[in-house]
Length: 154
Image (cartoon, rainbow, N blue to C red; front, side, top):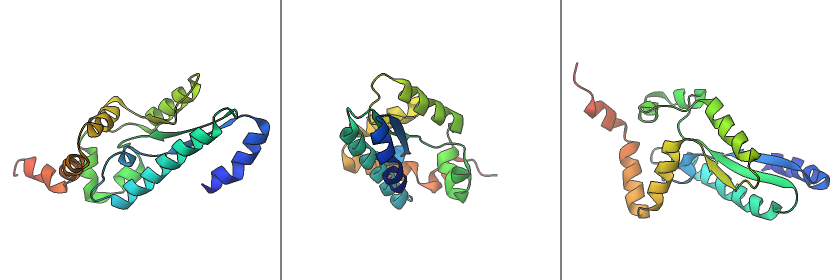
């Protein structure tokens, strides 16, 4: 928000520019064991969607890019709980940047773009479920015990 407040007036005066905010798939879904993170990303998403609407017709573009689990120090620094995120294929930072830049190149980019086909599918699927079902499903996804229970004893 502070960077937006600092740079937006100059972009508005020039009549061009862009703001890309980093949200997350967690902005769309309940995030058990990461509730504050998910809530913060939901704020980023809502802020950016509102900004996108306010900036229409000004020459300034704003949108949020929402990656899922990505191979960064953030994910690996989560410790043992990261196993639930890294059990699947991680996206690369370059993938996320490419998604954002491709979205920016569109003639009329919308307020948000979700990186990765599986992430888009997860968000779409959650919209078809009740909030309750979505929360319970994500609780199972984020349960670190589910991976150790499915692994054979050594």
